[in-house]
Amino acid sequence: MNNSNQSYAAGQGGVNGFFAKMYGYMAGAVAFSALIAYLCATVFQAQVINFLVMHKYAFFMLFAVQLLMVFGASFKPGRSATFSTVMLFSFAGIEGLFLSTILMVYDISHVTMAFVAASADFIVLAIFGATTKKDLSKIGNQAMAALIALVVVSVINIFLQSPMISYVFSFVGVVIFTILTAWDSQKFKMMYLQFGDQMNTTGLAVAGALQLYLDFINLFLQLLTIFSGGNSRD
Image (cartoon, rainbow, N blue to C red; front, side):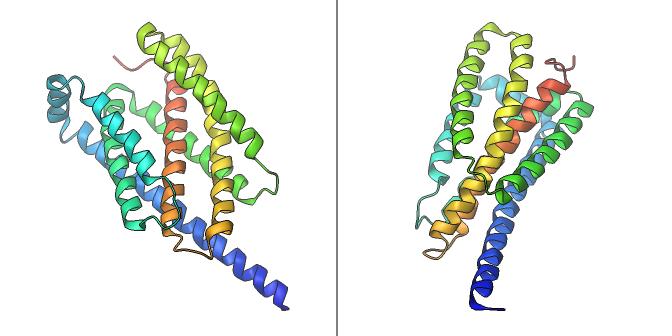
């Protein structure tokens, strides 16, 4: 093997190791959220319901905290990997509390179908984004613009309370987060290739894990709305 082949193999091995670390953190965060959601929806269901009834604005406060965590865990060269990891799993824990309410109101068969479908979709698109040579930045930016529009519609629908609007725009959401999954995989690969020889890449892997975690959770939620027909169980 000549020097160029050796360099390529070493570089490819580094990328594969980075992806293994990033997806490992992401899978760990999803598993932690699932555990918290299960415990809150079963073992501690009464306590959770009482807390939400007594503190009606708790969800909004926790959501605000999550937004701060997203900014806090975003990648910056030289940021502590420990700090980013704490932010990731703290965010996943709070998200688990939110998800527990889904387990309480949606049929478990719909939750299971949505999770399986989201997992399959995520895996395929993550692999595509990591391996394709096509630049996905243009379509990724378009998906981000569409996401902003989707958020605006979702906020308006909080007041309208229309299941049909939620159902129809869930299909749009699936397309958006499918594209973002591929784009984010490619984006963090490019960031690794740019910064990988200058720093400890664990912090970058954790930041990527958070972004991909958000893609997966939102993809799951959109699919859950579709599979349930936009309605929770009685």
